[in-house]
Image (tube, rainbow, N blue to C red; front, side, top):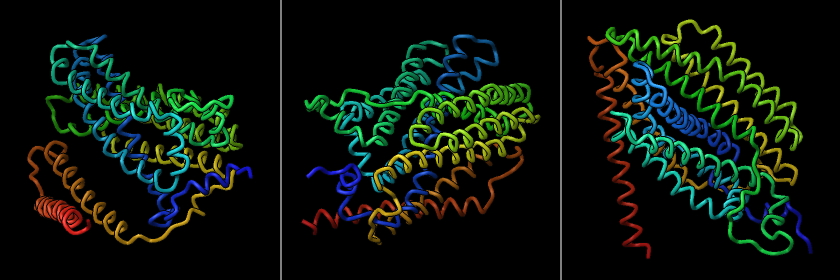
Length: 401
């Protein structure tokens, strides 16, 4: 008896089901992806500007290039950390397509780890040893290439995952099984350009306005910060129309392929045009940076929903829906997740407040007692969190044999 694609997808699901209501996990997937893609694209944008600043130097450009070189490894690290959550949600509610795409592209799925390690290490090498005097520029170039290639691998995995009707063809071309996993079976260039290089330029543009806003009270650096904010606005103004155009090309290719071309094109084109208008009327990029950040995060949220809509529509052809994914409430997992989220948000909130008050506030401003109390609470919560997992590990090792 021949099995249909839909039956295959349902059979490949976790027999225990999801640990929580699947549509809620789908929402968390989109939200956490927004944070992840912001830092990933920021890493690409800062890396490319660091290279540009050292290739075509002047006083301001070289100074900003050194800042970008310092930002790159930090953004890569944050991209890695924030990428864990959306990956876990994908593995939970999209396990059939995720594991199948990793199997079909197995060599590159494993290589991805080493590619990211190489890009991260070379970014640090350039920041520590090359950026002070401009040496080792090759390491910055190699880092950018590796980080971008890591994004390409993830793009291919996503493209393969939403085309389950071709899995058998790719796994056994002409009836001959191919287990090497070295072929890039599917991709979409407009989608790749939209999500990586163009969003990298826009994430960098937003970060530059934030940098100028953060140091707005430092009168000694006022001319430089005004220039940095202007560069951010110029980047946004130049890239936003390209963002709209590439979004339309994505809709005209992958969107049309899954029957939602005009819907996708309308949303992505409108987003790009709205960003163009915003940067056009942005007259005080330094002082309006927080609003610019909120607009960019909102834009990424819309893009994340478009990505999820394309995935949902592509799988709906075979009767696969997140809403119908079986689930059983696993209260242990839910409580651990909720506790980890609370601890993480508290620690991050404290760090953000300290960073802001140490440089973003006026010079005569002191650290608020409320911030100090939050720090004590967050530190205590973090210690309790580590202690809990240590005790769980010891209990598991000693008693659950």
